Each structure stands twice: as C-alpha cells, then as structure tokens.
Image 1 (cartoon, rainbow, N blue to C red):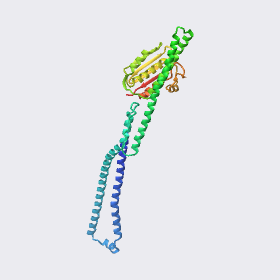
Image 2 (cartoon, rainbow, N blue to C red):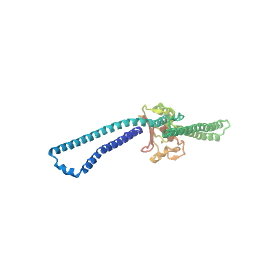
Image 3 (tube, rainbow, N blue to C red):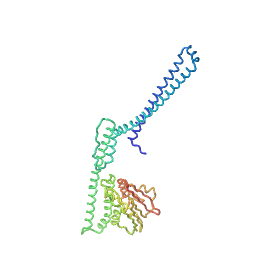
Image 4 (cartoon, rainbow, N blue to C red):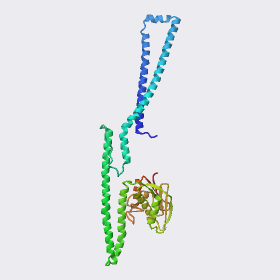
Length: 370
C-alpha cells in the first residue's frame, strides 16, 4: 500500500493523540484509586490501641454489617473503575478520530505548496519553462521550496534557450559551408575545361561531403531528440517502416516484414528519425544477400538482421555516439544511428533492447508505453 505524505502525517497526528490520551487516562485512573487505598491503610494504622482491642468484640451482626459495607464499597470502586476505563476508551477513540480528521485537513493545507510544485513539474517541458510557482504565505520552508524551484526553472529556461540558439546557429554555420563546397566541386567538375583527374577527384569528394552532411544532420537530430518531445500525435509505426523501405536500396537483401497496424504517441519527425536509423543500420551493417526482419505489433517495433557476430559487451557500446560494428569513428556511416534511436526512445519513454542474434547480426526492439 502506497502511503502518501498527507496520510502519514494524519496517522502520526492520530497516533500521538491516541498515545497521549491513553497515557493521561491511565494516569487519572491510577491516581483516582491509589490514594484511597493509602488512606484506608493510614486510617487503620492511626486507630487507638483501645479501639483496636475492642474490634474483635464486635457482635456478629455488626461484623456482617461491616462486611456488607466493605463489599458495597469494593463493588462501587469496581463499577467506578469499569466506567472510568470504558469512558476513557470511548473518549480516546473519539478524540483520535477527530484528531485524524483535523490532521488530514491540516496536512493538506501544509502540503498544498508541495502539490503545486509537483503539478507544475509534471506540466513542464521546454515549451513552457516560463511558468513559475506562485509564491505567497509566510516566510517558511514551503516558501523557500517554491522560490528554490522557481530559481531552478529560470536556470533550466536559460540553458534550453542557449542550446536552442546553439543548435540553430550550428545548423546554419555547418550546413552553409558544406553546401558551398558541394556546389564548388560540382561546378569545377562540370566545366568544359575540367580534366579527367579533376572529375575523378570530384567523384571521390562527393561521398565525403555527403557523409559530412549526414553527420551534421545526425548530431543536430541527436541534440534535438535529447530535449524531449514538443509535439505529440498518433503515428503509425508500420507506415513509417513502409516509407523507409521505399526510400532504401536493399541490394539483394531478403526482407521479411510482418507489419501490423501499430500506433504510437509522439513527435512524428522524431519517430520517423528513429525508424529510419534502425532500418538503415540494419541494411548497411548486413552481409551480402543477407536477411532483414521487420515486425510491428502491440506498440513494439522489432528490427533484426544478419551480419557479423557482435558480443553482448559490444552491444552496450553501440548506443554511444560514433560507434559502429567492430570499429569506431571509421566507415561509411556516421556512428550516430543507435545513439539517435536511444535518445528518441528516451524522449518518448520507450524501452530499447539490443540482443545479439545467433549466427550474427543484431535484434533491436523498441517498446512504446501504452
């Protein structure tokens, strides 16, 4: 059973009242009967010697009257004790219930700023970091909590704005020179006076420039995906897989696709990026005339391929940037595919699972939350 802070405080208040009420009632009952016994003993001890000697000479009738008086007194004391204990139990029970209700109300008022902070935190994203918690009331710990949270929001807002400006500036500054280089290479190679060596050089520069553009796009996509999702729509994962397959050259690969209608909630652009990177990686890191398995069902996307054997330790490294296959920072790809997949999945609260296939290759499963 999950106990909230409000319920714990209520139980604490009621428990303290019950404990203190029980202690007070027990003390009153003990003090109410203990002095009487002491008084009787003192009274008997203070009787004169002559009276003490005459006590045994009481008649049988007087003895019976005395015994009846003592029995009545004992019965009255027992009845009084019973009523006191019963009344104390009822009083402590009623007081505990009343204190529980009052404690529930007081705990709710005391914890109201905490609920405000948690509610604001749940609503926040990079789109509404300008929201602040209203600060009011006495200058106590709750006010300090709200002010501290507002200060943290201000720092986060400045950080996200700085990252957004950096991403926008980096996109412009990096893509501009790459586009210029590509244009210069194409113009130089396409001129009437271009030599055969120049055309060969231009042809070899084209894949290099294309890889640089893909790396820039991948780095920017990785940065944006780590910010979270700003747009939430219903997206069909099976449709994204079909679209990605239509764009790719499979080069003799055998594709086994079981694509059931599988909707997922998230950013359409980021989800397309996730599917595209998974499928492209499975095609690129495959063997000649290999196989590719694609499955969508029950909020889960599964991509598996044939390829070189990959150890379980190596799989944990593949989700890091600039890691690919058995090599680092080399090859035709950018080494950002699985890092982007992991970042996009985390932004959508999805779970990514990588397992090696028997005989070579990798199986990647992405399970989205309901």
